[in-house]
Each structure stands twice: as structure tokens, then as C-alpha cells.
Length: 252
Image (cartoon, rainbow, N blue to C red; front, side, top):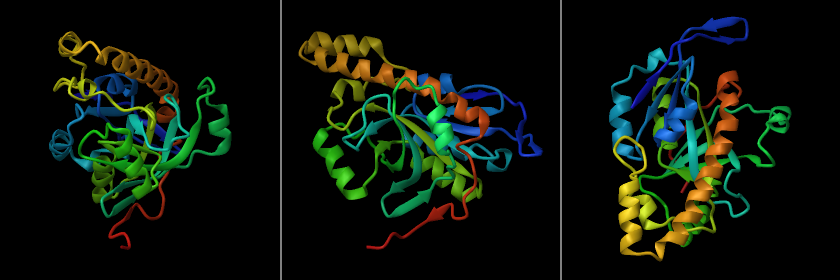
């Protein structure tokens, strides 16, 4: 899915007419991000689909890439609705430095209703990390604050093109909460939620209802915070170039 809008943005005293590419995983995230000066793509939480979609786009038509959406929590101190502005994205032995320059004044002025905004690493994965033990293991291995399935792909695309990359992700399922299996499999190819599949799953196993309700509450809280963060996209605050965009071959 591509949502397109082509207004120019002001950068310092220059006007760069190229839009920013916003990479999301779910249609709800894409709807929040869509607006003037942005082209928004939605992967439907399918890494291969995202790679194929990016391959159809000319990177020279964008002035930067931002990964924007929800994420799974790895840092146990983070709650649903808390915001992670990425300092780097880790995927296997590769690290991508994020071009983030949010300063303390911007963070303090964000109206997020007591939600925290932290700087931290993101772990990029190819499959949903659902179990609490798996989240803890990934946290121990990477030190990342959160995990998602789009940021590492978006970062690789930006690095190859030599354009700035940033990522802003809001915690949906915290580190202490396991993501129900039904929630993992209920995303439609267009990135929306398959409510019929959810209801069928509950009918087959009513015990999943409590976990799904908790997951839904967390997800809605995350979306509210994400809406509050949209102003960062409008002002370029999360898309400031850094000298080194990509670091590969992490020391063993």
C-alpha cells in the first residue's frame, strides 16, 4: 500500500521538493503518518513484501527515510505507549546508525501525556518476537530497547541510497507481556486486522480472550502515542544527517 502526497518541505534556507519515505508495518500506522510531503508504504508486517515494494521505488526521489510505527518492548522499564527514537538499528552482524537529532527541549515539549521518550537501539527481525523469554534473550544479545520488522530493511535501503534514515517506534507489547499467537496471525495482506479470524480464534479457545484484550489495550495506547509523535515527522526533527550511516561487520 502506498499513500502519496507531494508538498515541498523547508530545510534551513533551502527547499527540497522531494518527499520523505515513511515505512510502516500496519495500515493504522500508515494512516497516522500520511500527509503532505510524505510517501507512506505499508509492509503488512511482511519483510519480504517490504523488500519487494522498496525495490520498485527510486531512492533518488526521496530526501530521507523514516521507519514509523509500533514495536515490541525489550527494555523491561518501557511501558506501552512509551516512545523509542532510534540511535541505531541492529540486524545480525550489521548496525545502521540512525540520523536522529531530537534534543532535550523537543522531547520535553512533546505532549505525550506522561509517556516517556527515550533514545535507544532497535533490533530488526524477520518474524514476530512474541514470547517473553525470546524478548529477554534478544535484549541480552543486542541491548536494544525495542524490536520491529521494518526498521532494519528501511535502514538498509537508505544506506544503499546514501540518504538519511531515522526511526521512531512506540512500544505496543512491553517486554513483560507475551504476544498471543492469534494476534500474530491476524494481520491481513493489506496490513489491517482480520477481525473475523480473531473472533473465530476466540470461539475455538475462549481462554485467549483475556490476553487479546490486554494486547488490544496496549496497542490502542501505542497508537495514541504514535499520533502525538506525528509532529516530529512534519518538522524534520528526527531526520538529521550523521557522518556514518552504516557500520557493518560488528566485531565478534
